[in-house]
Structures are given as C-alpha cells and as structure tokens.
Length: 414
Image (cartoon, rainbow, N blue to C red):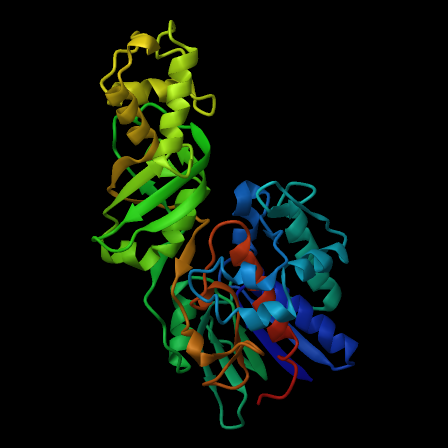
C-alpha cells in the first residue's frame, strides 16, 4: 500500500488529498492518504476568504491573461494552468454539487454566498475518498531514510513513513523550515496584499467612501512608479480597496525595502488625461453659473468628498460657479487627477493575508509540482514563491498546483 502524506490542512492540502485519493481509487491502487494539520482546525483561510463568502477563483479563462495577474510566478504558471485552470475549477466544484457564480469584477463565489459550502464540499469529498485528517499533528522534521522513503516526525514523537509527501503549509514559518531542511532555498519573504496607512485631512473624516474607477500610482525611492486601476476605499487608517491591494502585491518587496514609506498619487475618477477633468469642470461651470460650487459637482463623487476637494483648493464653498476663475478650475482638476499622499505604513487583514516569497521556483518541476532536489516531495499553494493579486488568483494557484501534484504523487518517485 502507498502511503501519501500532505502536510497542511488548508486549501491546497485538502484539494491535493481529495484528488490523489480519487485518482488512486480510479487506478485501483491501494493507498493511505493522510492530511497532517498542526492546529486544531482546518481550512481556516477558506473560511474567512472574501468576507466569509470564499472567493474561489476568477472568471478569466484565457491562460496567458490569467498568468499576468501574478507578480511572482507568472512565467512558471503558464504550463500548470494549461493543465488545470479556472474553468476546470468551476467544473470540479460543479461535479460535486457546488455552483460558482461570477460577479461583475470577475471574482467567483459559491452561489450560496458562504464559505461553509466550500468547506462542506471538501470535508465530504475527503471523507468519501477515504482521506485521513489528523489535527494537532505538527510536523517537526521530514527526512529520507536509507530505502528512499520519507520519515515524518510529529511533535508528539510519532514517526510516520510515507512514499511521497506534499508540503502545503501556506505562509507558515515551519513549512518554510521543512522545505529548507530538505535542501530548498527560501526567497525573501515580504507581506503582500495590504492597505496603506495615510494620515491626511482630506480623507480623515470620510471612512467608508468608495471610488469605483480610480487609478493609483505608487512612487518608491524615485524608481519607476507602480500603477493600478480599480475601486478605491477610504478607511479609518488610510486607503484600501482592490486598486490598493493590487498595487501592494506588485510592489511587495520594494515597499518592504522602503520600510513602507512612499508617495501615492490618486486619480479619483480614473480619467485618462487631466484635460478630461478640466473639460468636465468647465461644463459644470457653464451649466451652473448661478449655483454655489458646493452644490454642483461631478456626479461620480459624493458631496462630502467634493467639499474636501474645494477646501483643499482654498475655494469658499458658497462661491458661485460664475465667479470661479480658470486658475481655480486648474487647481480643482489637479486635485481630482493627482492628489498626492504620503504612505506611512501598511495595514493587513488579521488572518486573510498573502505572503510574497517562499520556495524558490527554479527548484520545482512545474509539470508535476515535484521538487527537483528531493524526488517524491511536492509543493502547492503559498509555500512557493508565487503570489497573485486580489480576486481569487491565490486560491487558483493552490487548486492548480494541488491538482497537478495529485496526478503524480501516487506514481513512483522519479
């Protein structure tokens, strides 16, 4: 009988265990599949993802375009996604009674709108396939014995022998250490997907206000700026929302090296040129001559935000549009097109975060998700130096890597 061990009871670990168990059964191979989870609970990130709804994947079925959503790993993922991509994920869940639906921005959730649907799907599929889930089984060490099999030492002192092993421990330090002990290189680690701490009077009283079509530019140490478009959210501590989270992923290591100090320019309406903003304001002036400037403003903006804009431009709120000079219109346009903020630090969601860095990608055979250094050792998910922008891309990396490993883990190590 083949003994296969998955270290980590999260998204990648469960997906791998279910698929390898089902594959072994299909091929009539007797196999014992075990998930070793260090804590007392499973699928923690799945439970909290997407505000408890679980953003399973993204409705983008073109492989090349999908790969472009990964600041690290885009080149290496091209081959894996050609084997198992977002469309295959949708089909996988559908075959197990879970329908995924796409929202306007492409994010896909179960139609029940609760992550418990995904957790139930996994736990039931694992049980049906005969996967053993062992909680509070922290792995202290993995090594190969003289016969080429793996000896897995549990913190309790128990030794488990396995023919193949997968490390699917997410961004936990002990997972990186296990990989390192088996000969792997761990690249520089840095937080990814974080919001920005900003203290500025312009946004201080506006938490909860959102802008659907913003464009943000991040300037770090006079280097070429990072750019992103998308929804923006003012929070109690600064700025967040998809555009900020995406730009934080692309600039993860640069922000780490800059101690999270940078300059951010915000184009609140996302218009392509400042002339477009000028034209818009000139039209408002033309049509609202007799009105006070505080009462006539771009319809995309909330009034309380507009009041902050005219305050920043040092224009009295009760001044009539007819009396607004071209210079004042220029100032308003510049504020709307490129408000500059000082970024003073980062803020991360308590548990729902992503790490940049991990096992070096040059040491992985992406056709099998197998180690080039230690045959029979597999990896999937965030333990690798792969991370995507927000929107379901990090989970898809976990599903794809786990599915590919599951096609190979029950075969003899190469």
